[in-house]
Length: 410
Ligand SMILES: Cc1ncc(COP(=O)(O)O)c(C=O)c1O
Image 1 (cartoon, protein in one colour):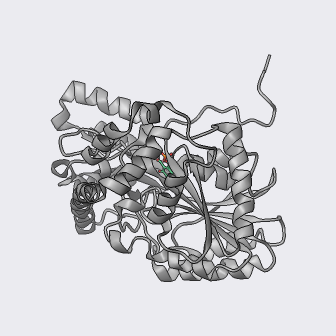
Image 2 (cartoon, rainbow, N blue to C red; image 1 turned 90 degrees about the vertical axis):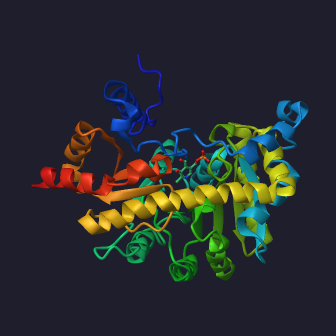
Image 3 (cartoon, rainbow, N blue to C red; image 1 turned 30 degrees about the vertical axis):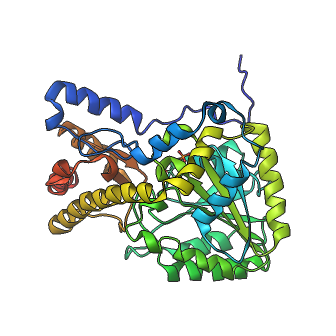
């Protein structure tokens, strides 16, 4: 007997992270933690190996009252103060029409963006090297996915391939949804330049003349940009969007506030016309109601309390972790360059990815584990989570990884 509908993907989720985390933990038991390099975990960890739960965030959460934590949110769109403060936090002052729909994490926002614009069987455009959930969401929503290659042969951001993939859908479906995970791309750490963003928006404006386009900008890691003050500058390019282009910006309190388990985030919708924004808001709200109803009320109150009453303290604490991420990634990047370990272009963020041909990737990943180095396989690469890699273990790691790569490719 098979109880599951025919159209569902019945293959179990391929667990690329937690299976390796278990292996890393077993190696720590056997060989001692000091002899194991664990660069698997995708959350922020401190130098002592503890998950970071920022003091400013959780002392603020203690000020959220039991009634606020117990109660439902004010509505399916989220609490109004959360929605206002979230717009300010994400896009700042914008002359575009905008709305916010609170979501359970950035996941909820990305899911709305992938699910609500395309008809069953249509195609969403996603990056080839990417957070695996995009493809899972497409499948879940009975969409096809076409992947643009993130980088060309010169390691430049591959706008040409985005254009090719988008153009291949132009006129063939009612709308086009393009997913761009920027800045601090997971898993390469690439950040597009402002001019790449300008070119992308101007291209989408052209495509929009025949087929309306939605740019789904996943900004999960934006608040760890190394040049934080300039991290939103590229969003100015959204102001050049024509009537037929809309942006849905998926923000995640998980990363911003180190509060992954509290499941709070937002879909920030921006477009030229208020009517277009309202149309998206309506279907997002209905979908929210149908799937998760409303979002963690305590988490929304906490976001507001931090923004209003603990802003400086929070920003100062987060700045220390940005500094730490930069220190770890600088070490790894510099040493990788010195020994010719090939990396995808890393600008900033939680992850660095080593370029590895898919044909030898599995063997390389296993050889690393044989040497007590634990990482995660991604498409065409091996992800090193600098977010959880202490400075002491980042030192010397690139050379070790290069030597092992040489043995696998010899
Ligand atoms: C690229 C990217 N986008 C979105 C998310 C969503 O995270 P959350 O739902 O916890 O906010 C993640 C989490 O790992 C991610 O890596």
